Length: 241
Ligand code: IPE
Ligand code: IPE
Ligand code: MG
View (cartoon, protein in one colour):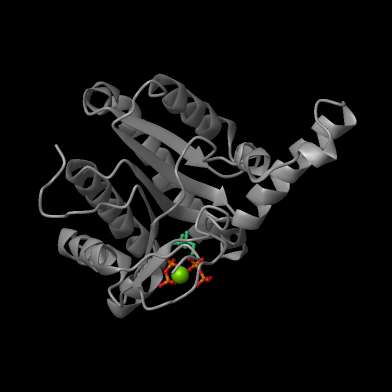
């Protein structure tokens, strides 16, 4: 049920889950512990957003640039992702009852067969769900996503499926991981950084941005409410007056 405490809800929210490492460092813990806590916050906020009636939500879990981190950190993040996939399989029935459709954004060719198999399985098993569209971006880069779409278009031109003059914004959109989803209305980034870090570049063309100094593992439902309240007050003009 949509919650009545907001008059306007963004159709699509993007969440850059940042600050895990600093959260751990502040406690004298290894960075991995921050990712473990951050993964809990992801589950909590994902569920909360669905209960509020947010139809589309995309969480940024691992960027194409994050491979440059120490190997043990990358391994820990991939392990947490694998744990999430297993849990989502175990809870498939529950997710279906809640109408949750799962999608994974990003280039999965660099991931293990085991992860890819589980991702394909979950996407397929939830593909008829329409209530909540939950996206998890993993090995995702916004520029790479656009490049991928452009390459598809080039192939279609070579095979004479389309002509260059027929290319529209929709043609490019059709090659994105979020092809059937609305543009991002609101980008939430905790941890004090105010940048997009290659997240949903195309989709966020007219997004509102909301930043907070809270580190992702400390992010609460109240912080999410605060972002939505700020969004309600924004005057969106889309180039008009
Ligand atoms: C976000 O937290 C998680 C990933 C990028 C995988 P960070 O690990 O970037 O945390 P900080 O920015 O170092 O605090
Ligand atoms: C963005 O965070 C990526 C994710 C949250 C998955 P980063 O911590 O990698 O971004 P930068 O390096 O500070 O821009
Ligand atoms: Mg970071």
